[in-house]
Length: 185
Image (spheres, rainbow, N blue to C red):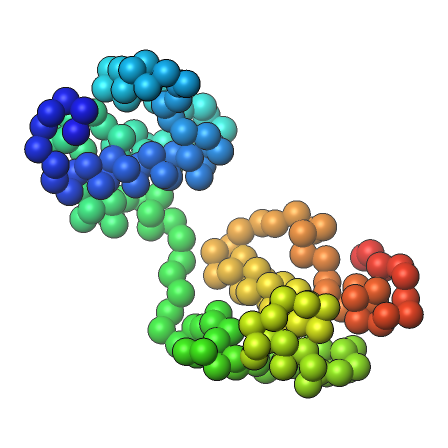
């Protein structure tokens, strides 16, 4: 677009590549405080791809952020790319939804975990139904996040640091107001 060429879908692929780059590296592929310099970098320079991520992801981003629109990867090619296909997909029937429409639907697994440790489960569910983020809803939200994270890890065979998955069952201070200590594994 900076080169005064017509806009088409390839510009969207380039933009998605920039977003993917930003997610992978934590910063934009082109930057400058000066707009003219920034535009010049976008038009003339190639992004730097540090080897801190998979070569497959670097290949995909390189093909998405290609300067020549006619050589840029297509949506169909992205769907076939090895990096894109390295993740398992969520199957129909798998659900991580907490709400159906505006109605809160408690997860049976979370209910089973919380029933013996949350003194007032009804208040917890009322806060959830009312979309209130308070200490009553916190136990459900924490356990739900834990269960979703576990499911996604199993789905994609991803290794997550043990400390990230500390069991919510060990968080006595959250579930027992008289306890002041959080037990770690």
